[in-house]
Image 1 (tube, helix red, strand yellow):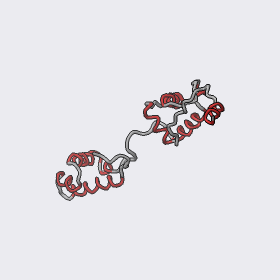
Image 2 (spheres, one colour):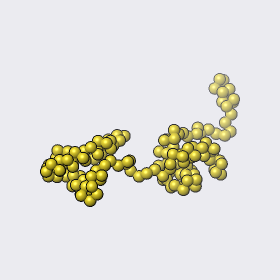
Image 3 (spheres, helix red, strand yellow):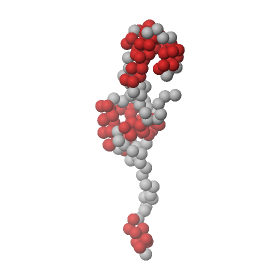
Image 4 (cartoon, helix red, strand yellow):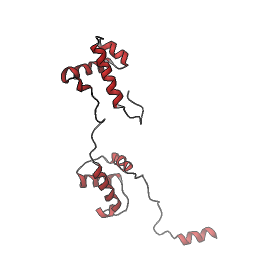
Length: 152
């Protein structure tokens, strides 16, 4: 089932739970009883016991992080922001608008890391950038004439 959206896993609590389960197993409780007391499924207790048998108690230690390691390192993110501030025209684009596809292409060219264009917005948001669209106005628009028309 997992955690609700936005709630991070607490690795210390999870590690503590695994070690408490192991202590109960050492005291002679069967895996079903340990699972019931720890409020986990019996498969988890079985997996923990198997890992301890294969590797030792260090198998119950917490993981450093959840999920896949990021493709871009912090130094790359700083360099990416510098490149973004230079604008997309520097890369030969006609318009001064960064799109997800363009940013993904920039990341691949500069750092050799491929990101799906749908994921790029998470990187940009982490850098403090926001999604903005330019106002759609005609190039021929005459602001003075518009003000005059509104007055009269």
